Length: 148
Image (cartoon, rainbow, N blue to C red; front, side, top):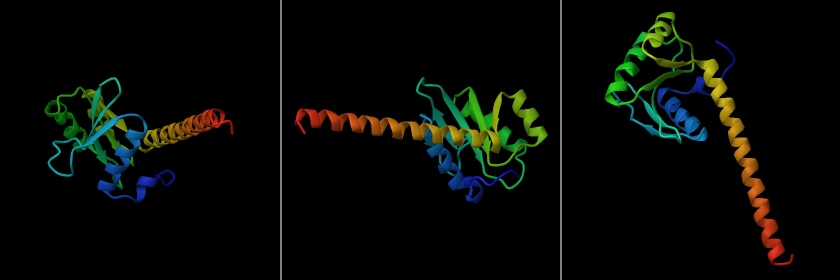
């Protein structure tokens, strides 16, 4: 496996919560469906345009096989969505890739996940800079208002 990433030391449930935080930081509304009886989707994410996607989270020490793709594929009908993805801290087997392609399931492996983490960190940095800028503008406004 490539360099160590934060989720490599997590268990499956921690990985799900990590993904909740990640997608929220990217601007999505996120619902964690629970840890059992999730019908093949661990998360439901919704963009600011209202588009929903279900996510099957797989924190594995080996490649993810076709079962995860089968689970999330069948969950699309249950949750009445057209978009689904499997996200892992690892990689996908060739059969999983083939099945995902034929079922229109997006696969996010550790490399793509690392890219999302970087994007999230950049967005958080931008938000912090924006917040500081707004805070400084407020301070300047009140200082002028009070002639300080």
